[in-house]
View 1 (cartoon, one colour):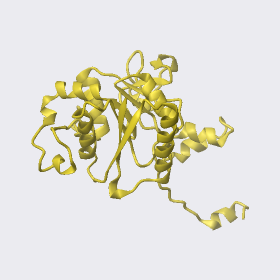
View 2 (tube, rainbow, N blue to C red):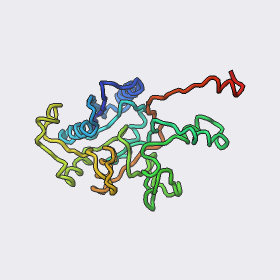
View 3 (cartoon, helix red, strand yellow):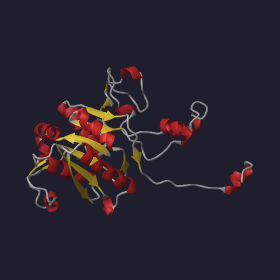
View 4 (cartoon, rainbow, N blue to C red):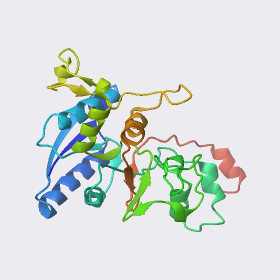
Length: 267
C-alpha cells in the first residue's frame, strides 16, 4: 500500500498542530504498519481546485499509488484516524471535523443540560460534513441539524455513511479516481504543459474538484463538487469516521470590556 499525503499550503504556511500530526502519523505507521508507505507533497497555490486536481491526478497517473490522503495544513488528529480509514476499505473515507467557529448562543443554551463545559462545547460545535450531509436509511437530512432518528443512521464500525465529506482529511482510493474519469471524460485533459505541467504533472489532469452548480445555479466548493460527482454521478458511497477527536486550527478574536466585568461585581 502506497499513500500520497497531499497538503495545500497557501503562502508556504502550515500549523504546528499539523506538523505534530504528520510526524506522529509517519512514526506510528513506520513502527506499527511498515507495509504502508507514505509519500508527501506540499503545494503552495491559492486556487484550491487546481491543487486538489493536481494531487488527485498524480495518484491517478501513477499505478504505484493506492490512495490519496488529503490532510490540510490546519488539521490535527491521532494516527488511529487513518488506521480506521484504511481499515474501512472503502473508495472514499473522510471524517467530520469541527468548523472553525463556535456558536456561543448554542453553547450557552446547553449550560443547564450538560454540566461539563468541554462536553457542552463539543455538542454546541458545528461540524463539516454533519447535519444535512448525513445519510439515513430512509434518505438524507433535509437541513443541517435535522437528525430524524439516530437509529436511522447508516453505520459500519466507526463510520457513518454520508453524502458529503470535507477534504480537510479525506482518503481516496485510486479506483475511485479511475471511475470518475470513466464517468466524466470531459473532466480529463492532456494539454497541460502550460498549466499543470509546470508543477511536474505528466500524462493529463482529471479536473474532478472543479466547482459545479447546484439545482439553484449556485456554485459550491471543490469538496462538494467532488462528492457530488462521486455519489450522484458514479453511484459511489462516502463514509466518515466519527469516533476520533479532530482538531481544526483557526483564529479567534478575544473581545474585552473591563467595565462590563466590574459592573457584574467581578474584578
